[in-house]
Amino acid sequence: MNGSGDMTLAFELEALSRLSDPGATFEDARGWTRYVGVVSDEPTYVVTNFTRKHRIRQDFFSGPRGKRESLERVGEQFDTERHVLVGAAEADRELAEAIDWEYLPVEEAAEAAGWSLDSEAETEPATDEDERDDWP
Image (tube, rainbow, N blue to C red; front, side, top):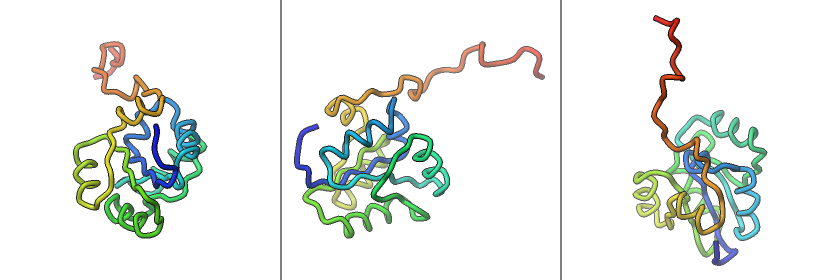
């Protein structure tokens, strides 16, 4: 990804979980952003567990607030030229536009930055192998 290093980059948790190596993605993003963090409407412990599991050190996170309030506060707190949300849903795009953030779908961000998407994170239909015959 090219652009100014004077950027605040927020990953929506679902978008981050679609990447094959979220920890490496975060470290790569640190090389060309000023601040990077995770936002989500999920409870704090969900974000904390995910970031610990992937050894992610973030500059900000949602905490007990939802995505909108978190992004608004981050935008006020971190004075950078650009504020970019990497998301995974149309609702993320709408939110970014409503609060004057740039929006980038995770697929486009991954392609531009050379990150790999996790093929298992994409929705795959359940197979018969996932079901047990001995269960009612």
